[in-house]
Image (cartoon, rainbow, N blue to C red; front, side, top):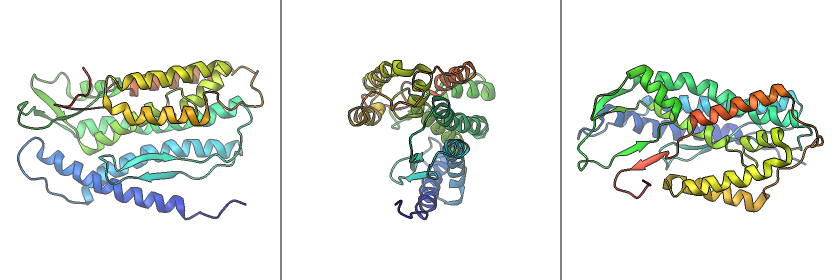
Length: 295
């Protein structure tokens, strides 16, 4: 019998709201002072710029999965958010629990693809709005501050160029908290679309490629491990992916129609999710000047 924990999803949501508001308040404070020596003034309410944006992106992603499950009458939990107030993002994302086997490839594909597509639809306007609210500022002298730089996915670069054009030499974008939330949303979308095992991308890969997806999973894990030699910011993700490979194995659980190919319309949607992955991916998500983070 399933235990009655209906209180847990809303409790985790409230905790994640609090942790992202707290971290968002610090992001807003440092956005105001930029690279100056002025002390950042903490105020909780402006944290909503970051908090509401990232919760909208992550929540829409998980609700995409959830409502696809509801549509196909697949038993699934509401979204569980993961509050982490000790990291700059304030959260490690969210997930839903699917409590039964998904019987067909079409259903598996729709449930797997619904999340990243829904989250991406919210992240794109948030990205453009966040970049527009940002400021172009001179870079500080190289030896005056420990500079943390964010990797720029193709979509982020396009938004920055469309909003600000070519930046003058020696200048950078001081990213508004809404822009940082959108950047994090793009990163989470890319991570979920890796064609590995039980990730969204793994479900899409199995539905589209069948048994050939096993080789794609092994190749995907190898790529993630290889990325750690380019940027240490991939290390935790690589450990999680290798652990998933060891615990669950490289083969995706089979559907009842394993031998039936996916229809052409869904294959086109699979190509669209691959394009979303390319637009959201960055090979070096975080760099800290002065640390060994890759070439």
